[in-house]
Every structure is written in C-alpha cells, then in structure tokens.
Image (cartoon, rainbow, N blue to C red; front, side, top):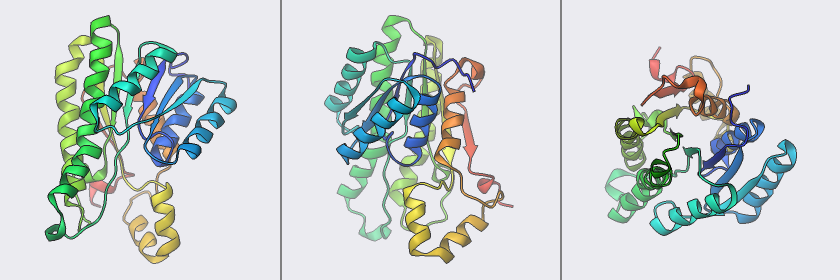
Length: 257
C-alpha cells in the first residue's frame, strides 16, 4: 500500500509487542517516522525499534512512559516534537487486562485497570489535540479496542470489559469534539490475534486454543500486521469519510453464527 504516510510522525503506544508491533511495522513499511511508547522490557523495545529503522530505512525513537500519568504523557510528546516536529497520527494501542473473580476485585485493581486502559487513551488523545489544534494542523487518532468492547464470554474480566466498552464511547465522543478541527478519530476492534498471549495459550492448553479458534467464522486468529493494515488505512486521506467508526476486525466473531 501507499497511504501517504511517508515522512509523517506516528505515535504508537505499546508499540513494541503484540498487536502494537504489527502496527509499528506497517507504519514503518509505509515510511513514517515512529515514536514508540513502551512500559517494560527496555532492551527488547530498543532492539525492536532499531530493527524497524534498519529494515525500512525510517527513523524510530522508543520512549518509556506510564500513560496514566500526565507528566509521562507530556514527556512522550515533548520527545516526539523535539525529534520529528508536530505529531500527525496517534495510535492508542497500549492496554492491559487480568482475570479475577468479581468478588475478589479490589478498588486498587479497578483503578489500575482504568489507569492502564481508558485513562491512558484519554490522556494521550487530549495531549494530541493540545499539540495539533493550536497549529491548525490535520491529525488522526485510532483507538485500539477489543471484542470485549461489545461483549464478553469470559468470566473474571469485569474490569477489562468495562474499560474497553468505555473506549468505544471515548472514540465516538472524541470524533464529535475533534472532527471540526481536522482531527479524524476512529477505532479498530480486534478479536483473537496471534500475538504473545495467544501463543502462550496455544502452548499451555492446545485444546482450549482449538475450541476458541473454532468459534471464529474464518477459522483462524488474526495477525498483528493485519490489524496494522487497517489502522494505517483509517489514519490516511484515503479513508476520510470514516468518522467515529469502529471497525470490526474479529474475523466475524461478533456475528454469532
């Protein structure tokens, strides 16, 4: 694809692992300058960024940060602007979840999940708007959601599902508030994706993995790069009519047939 991303500055949160790694690779392939946020495994993250830079001939910086912390979010944008100038695209990919019986979930658990997911997306989007709107520039925000944004068939995921549902509302509301300023906001909703978590599940419980994949109409998990392809498309001029859209990338899992 040639989506017009060459030379653009793209910020990708959680962009060195799992789905985020596929998103980062697609934008690198498209020739964008990358600002990749990470929260753990500094050496692995730097190695991944260097690999993309060498493979695709692009510029990449990796910046640590807790996205639920306003100071860390501001620092991330400061580093991006210092290196590349004003950001063009934000991909809100970072997020974490856990499984726990509902009655055992503490307020601390709830607040930590809120911080890691919904609050992180809010703070990143708010800072993006603060940096882009005053300069009257165009911009794109793509929020990575989940099939859990719409439904949950897994016990023990109350906090994660609640956050992911909130991110759909955030996506729609950001589109209402920001479209008039030239910022396009959309979301992508992955289902089962063959990333590190699913590989671990495959190794630990092949039968459960097989059962889960059989529920997917296309009979296979997605890949991080497939999600990245959709994200890059939504963040391009070729998809200008998509405003506040949530794209189902679950392989038909939500259709229920």
